[in-house]
Image (cartoon, rainbow, N blue to C red; front, side, top):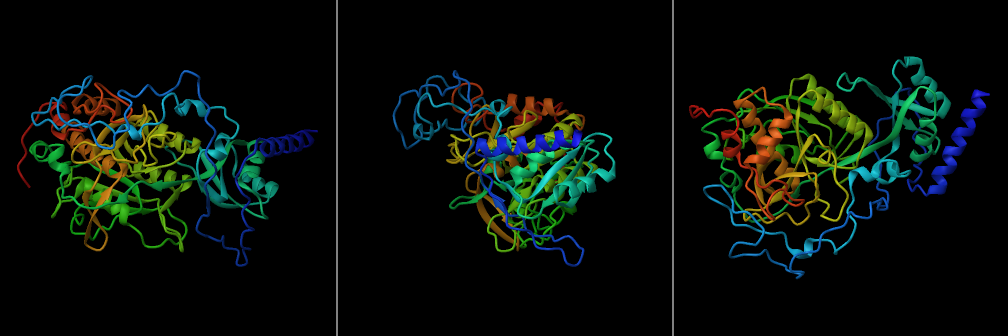
Length: 494
């Protein structure tokens, strides 16, 4: 009778998914395993259509002041309703152009509205079409792993039991033309399974640009901050595409490397090297925290034949676990993706252990859903501005944005002893990570809430007075943050 009830439940779940219109396409049949060794192939990614807006009636955008369709930032004179900067060298105030706003009264997308939506797992963002993630119930034995594989015609592709989360994940590879949504629906109902979900895909959030010099350090008063701290004895985890540790800017910076990628990726470390240089460059460039030690966790790779570096939930969780075990108290997460239940567990666990996490706000534009991990309540989400404090054109906005930092035409290092100009909220996040490292040198006992509060209190307000959905609390100020982190002390130049 129990087996009959289970079978009926599976059929009912599948019928609901089909009726609701889930759009994940079925993958091609997996290559047969002739040698007995699991086939490790690059993940194939499907990007579903956007999740229909699920909003509360009163959540609308405010009426745009002035109503004009300006194409240039407002200049000259004090803008009504904005604060003057308190920095001794105040930046010119810039407002985001009106044309970057969504039409009046258009609903906003809030993270809380996702809860309970029947299609959220399949429409929230891109995912690997060949694998699914299963979280086993507490106390489940090893025999359950194989039992699930046999019952659902799956292949065990990896297991992860991070002490950080205190749970066990199993990654299963789909066989015989199965689809992700059908497998998740069936697995969710199987006895001993606590949760099942797609193996989500995440993208890096940097983009190349042109014409500028290294303006960022002076913009956020890094030179003055280095008279107080340079990040000495602070360990920062960079979960990204890997770091070129032989680059002259980073030869003394990388403490250890870890590779979470299980397919053979193209050799692509550009994004990770660029983020590391923003944080720690110490040769021709001036890094925000040039004395930090970096943990390079490679979760992102470009599959053979691909053009874009991607990572899965599984690879990011492995990187988080490794970085935490190695002692990192600061994590740089310069990537963005969907609201992912398994990733949320990992972020919750890191926050509970007093790890400071800084992430990109996202480069999808203002009229888009919040990007994760930045939108997690314990993560410091950073947006990007240029040298005149104009917002990066493709930056996400929303209540989750905590701070702004330089992120447009920023000079940084790339593999092969090269240098490039790069733009995006990834770059901005790396600047704030560097400032956090300076603060941690001053006071290693700092908790994440105090770090966030100090950064917010010392930020230079931009846009409308007070925190707002575009700039957060304002432009990060390295010297201001350090002055509010205990008593300053002068250190000898290195």
